[in-house]
Amino acid sequence: MVPLLAFIHYVIQLYVYVIFASVVVSWLIAFGVINNSNNFVNSLLRGLDALTEPVLGPIRRALPDLGGIDVSPIVALLGCFFLQSVVISGWLIPLFS
Image 1 (tube, one colour):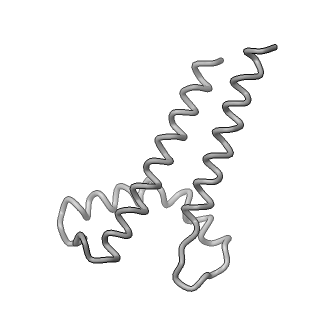
Image 2: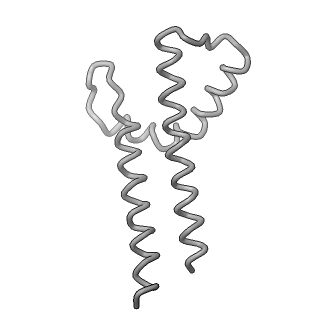
């Protein structure tokens, strides 16, 4: 059971990195540092969107409009951190029982 919980923890941590990468790439595009007409950047952006949109899309629809500020990655990160704490607590309880 412990290896499964460790795997879930690592997958959630990997998804946190993907969310951070998506946010950073979107900021770089918004500030004109990188150009999304570049094939590599466009494919990276489409890949990150494909990974994050199934989670961030429903959060965006549930949150009120904040006038151009997207807080859905923050909510998703809080959810990931909450899930990690649940996994870790589920991991530690059997070890000490």
